[in-house]
Length: 126
Length: 474
Image (cartoon, rainbow over all chains, first blue to last red; front, side, top):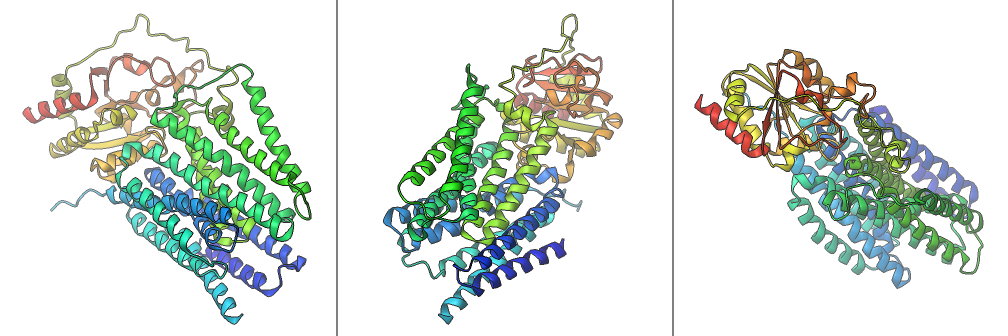
């Protein structure tokens, strides 16, 4: 588990190095970057599989709420769209995307916590 | 220039930290007592990623970002705080819709941007953008339909019409053909509006696919659909990561995709259906012939709450089998009271939770936890099935098909092969039920006609409350 995690972090760091090392028009750098992206995807999917198969059925609803909140990370792409120097209608599309993703980030983490708070063990006899 | 590079490095470090927080957070979910802290860590990761992004050098104005964040919070916070636990499946379905909406908007906007800025996104990015928009758009409408079916404003019955298969196939292959054409012609250097038209048309077709995909699927199959849409939303987010070269989107999307995929498979198995059968079942007219066993000539034995209280009150080992009917009757709190009472009298009480007991994976556990049933009393199918033989009384509350022995011993039954709870092994069975209506599968349940079974008819909440009162008076 920890090894996989380290590999992912390593791969991400490698991509950062690759992405900053060349100009975007350098085609070989672009292909390298995309290969690394595929690595990142495969390792993340593998790690996800390993961890999520271990989540007990007891917590499957919170799991779904949690992964839903996490995948609202598309918020970061929406933020750039809403704030970058682009035509107005693109900024507005970005703004709607920011709102939609924020609903999931805020609502998702709040509701997951609300559910997890309810799961309690039997109190030890006094 | 140096500032910009430092800034970019900081953003990447924030993303790496967030990825690690997400993965460790999900690992926390493998145990109930570490789950909450894990998810708080994941939330911190999210905040980190957002702050990192706000420092992105591409951003020149913050007004639209701020409006979006404020509006999103204003809608998301009450949704998170106020949605009742019984409505959790709807709330998850609608959040898939919001997630997919964000992803689809990003896909469309990035396509337009690449065309205007550099003539086209290039083959690899076009593949990713197309995938993102295709899956994003069908998840928007698909989730909305699932939301409608769960909420009840779209009929829960499968909707079919003549020629449906042909229409669906045409729409599906049309969208795929446009996708391929976009990759071939729009990767770079294309001029004119043909690309925009194709992209728009593909998006519209994908929106239609979402509707036609979910329309023919019955309300009882929604757990699979919601899990599947969860997976699609994740994959679309991951594709966004490929399209804009952002690793954290790839990682988070892959985690979501994997989770949705695993849950869909678990749900399909628990319902004795294949993926394909759930998705296309309503088309094939393969509505299985009703079981050859009928209830004719069989009689049930019904008991009063007083009788039931006598049996339950003196039992040493009780297993409760809750079904969605219990949640509909809002009987969770009465059931918890019953459980506490049995424990106080020295008996042992456990809950047997079938994977499809609620309306989504794990739903029943949440509903019972909300009613203050400790989670160490909740057992899943594999853990508890061997224990029924040793139990004095099994109480089935608002559950039907998941207890039907026909799944084990009647090859002619439509639910043959479905994993069930071995309630029939218990020494005595008490079934709390409104009437003799059949379950979702529309078949008779032999369990109700066994000699050891007593039927306790009535609304679960009032019946259980009466039983509790009677036991107190023993």
